[in-house]
Image 1 (cartoon, one colour):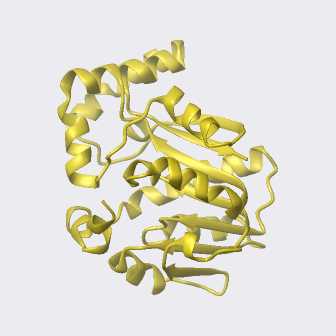
Image 2: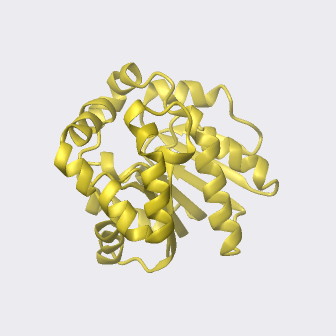
Length: 230
């Protein structure tokens, strides 16, 4: 699947690289960092896309230096035009920079794209004191019953692994991580420009989530999982 990003196919299917979602993601990441009083002098994002998450975090953390690694030439070109004195972007695989170490390493909506995601998660461990993962929770009762949402994610955005909360957390633990904090993010409820079916599901998702968060996410979907691990 790496060829999808290097060849430009992903850019053709997703011309904005989801830049419009970056401020929303950055706010959740910032809240997680602040809530746990994490060190944030050096922050790295693997699979940074066009860099908008890091640029938003640069504004939130004025003392931080930030590094973004991306394998797509198309995304890197866009990111490199926006780099600053404190935020730099690299067209390379982070794993090629042996010996690099950061306070925080971000893997935001990345794991589900990686063919050997177990090795990826294990190899990421020495590069940062803390890691923040964001997993789309593609598996829910309604997505399994309809099937086509998962197949569309595979075709359009290259998701080749599918998680629900328990498998995402268990994967990190099996790879040697300690879970420090985690919580749901509600993209289908909080982001604009959603499909009609997602807009129709907003009310039942909100109502059920207010009653039982885990059950709502498991049954109706529409959420992702933000995880702080060490």
